[in-house]
Image (cartoon, rainbow, N blue to C red; front, top):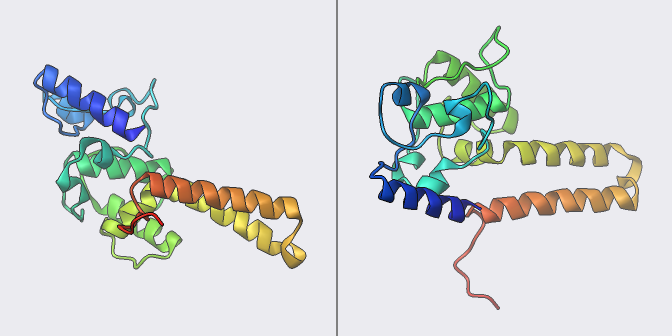
Length: 189
């Protein structure tokens, strides 16, 4: 899916001389040219592609993988900020992390809460480990819930529980590998 989307975006950007740069709503409103998801352009009516969409894979921008920290700004911050909001990480006293393109103290707190929740070192910086787990946060948490439910049953639960757990982990592994992780350079045997 990402490859097809990347090809389509590349074709449209070349045909209309549009830079393949991820934009925020405020940049679009100011007249900048680039790429933006419907969810950021019109969040009251549209939800696609959503916070789980991996713009780095689609836009193939090297700088999408640079670490982000407090006081950074721009479309990459807006992308990760929207993802944290999607997974309901919010600053103290707030229901949701506000959308925006600034890596402020609220976003740093949300990143720290996410890192704490998934067992990463709590730095408040969006680094490679944090990005990877933010991409797969929903699947990971769902798998952990199923594992926890499975472990809570005496001696492992029923065979259908084991089958459901195995299917969940298989789905997680497939999603992880499809995203380009977990691949090796070993030839097929």
